[in-house]
Amino acid sequence: TWSAASIVEDQIARIRAQVGTGKVVCGLSGGVDSSVAALLVHRAIGEQLTCVFVDHGLMRKNEGEQVISAFRDRFQIPLVAVDAEERFLTKLKGVTEPEAKRKAIGAEFIRVFEEEAAKIGDANYLVQGTLYSDVIESGGGTGAATIKSHHNVGGLPDDLQFELVEPLRALFKDEVRAVGAELGLDERLVWRQPFPGPGLAIRIVGGEATKDRLDLLRDADYIFQDEIRKAGLYRDLWQSFCVLPDVRTVGVQGDERTYGAVVVLRAVTSDDAMTADWARLPYDLLEQIASRMINELRDVNRVVLDITSKPPGTIEWE
Ligand code: XMP
Image (tube, rainbow, N blue to C red):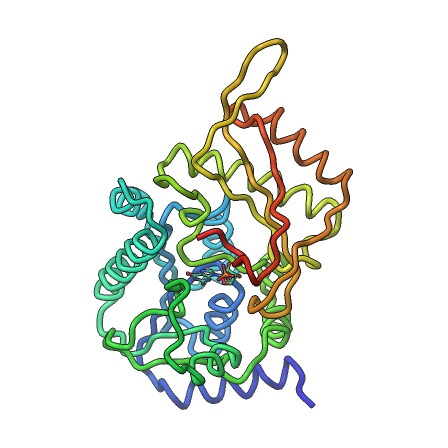
């Protein structure tokens, strides 16, 4: 039997044995895996660890600030936060094709991370939040077609000049959450729903991810999350988020014709993201979400619900 406390103790000993007095960097995404990995390593070797948080401007509302305050203020972990929004938006100009978008973001992410890691100087180790499930998934590859090229902090290429430190390699997601709670991680981060590395950019579909569209999507997403949390459903859902297709539709508001944006609601239940079922959200909740979006967001005049399971749909739209 395992307990979170014994995993922590065991991993601390292993991390110390691996890195000795070496310097270590860790890319933080705000997700539970990289957060717990960073906390464990910090417990083990303190200030030998520097975390790097690349804010690509594609995060949800207030998320960047939450990461910075959790790590820098609460745990006093040395943290380099890079505001790279401009750089990413520049790279995304004119890019609408899903894979091109993913690749542009992934490549820029590595560039920014490498620049920052170089500034830290003589770090030889890189923390990765690889889980047991990631180890299994990448082991059984039979050359199946790539459905989506994944980008995440855990997916930095091996040819970065680092030795990997992977304290979560033997753990399942629920164990990672328990370890996070044991280490005092904010419960908001412990229970955070998965969020894709390329962020909101892959939820702006059929068009370019511009600052204006990202801001609109962020606001819609905020309302959705807020209502889901208030309804007590946040932890029951694998993910709940909005998609903003590049489409306008005609509506009417106060005798006036409108020609506005459509927000898609996507909520799924799942155990592992390999398959997923669309969530049967209560009608009254859906009504409340739609009316808040239309009242609070000037540009939105229509809200629709995605009722596709995976397969045949994927969870994300791109
Ligand atoms: P799909 O859309 O393929 O997504 O059904 C399965 C799960 O993976 C997440 N996802 C990503 N996570 N980097 C990530 O870290 C990515 O590039 C990425 N793309 C999709 C998605 O949110 C879902 O949980």
